[in-house]
Length: 386
Image 1 (tube, rainbow, N blue to C red):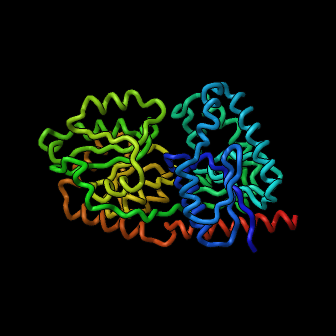
Image 2: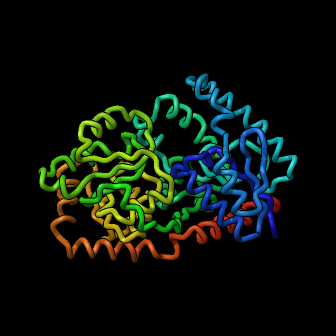
Image 3: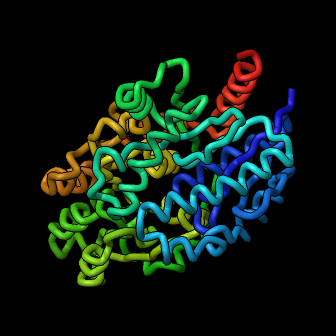
């Protein structure tokens, strides 16, 4: 049976973050299955999406941030944030009734309160564990509203069993109302003509992600700068990612070492695939992740990975597929980078192990969409029967 499913488009802005990638890829594969009618709420209107081309056009032209740009100016106070969320909820519920929607899937933590069955995806609990790694007003807002969003949802989806267990324990969510679904690897192919963009007399270690304290980028940079001059000429540190919260010190550190560190800022997906394909190794030291999508995407290109040994990374890293380090210990990070330079046999081993691990069927967006669609049906049927 086909259902009408509505999504909030807040994460589908012109520059997709991790949540945006999740939302985009999920909707794309749901559309290709032709089982349900997909609607997207964009702040003041709702669009029905029938084809991938329509989704691409919507994502490229999404102006939701401009619609609510005044919010960021006025809503420094948490109560203003709650007020604007309430206003958007009114618009949202109007369209839910107008289009006779069967189910609402909020892919980005904070669901609008509505009378129809709701599935909410909670990607991580960094706002709960480490509020100091978020702007104060954001962490206060999250602490007020995300627990309510979790409690009100008919069903919760997480990206990993680690976050699933945390939510069950912290918010007393019964196991029958929550599932973990691993994320997929995107099929974005590299362009072999990339090299003209870099003075490629060197190899490079690569980081991809937002420039913010939680990613432990400072420790990566300090570890890399321990290389002697002969190594920094052969191996650069390439950093890709949009500027984030509290990033001034990191940007200053990068600018002080421009001869060794290359910062490219935000890059579109095709460029990221290119830089990944030609990287010597990928380094991702986040202190906490709901999943760690860049890790599995690097593995899928056959690139050895160095990542943090935090338990929240276990789902994506597996056992023995990459080098795990304490992201707070600069010596460990430095030694892991040197290990990949000096041990060609182990370099090849980690390349193959990561590639084999990432090729599992569970790391596919088709699988994510299939499992999620099954949850939709169960939630709708249970709501009708109850």
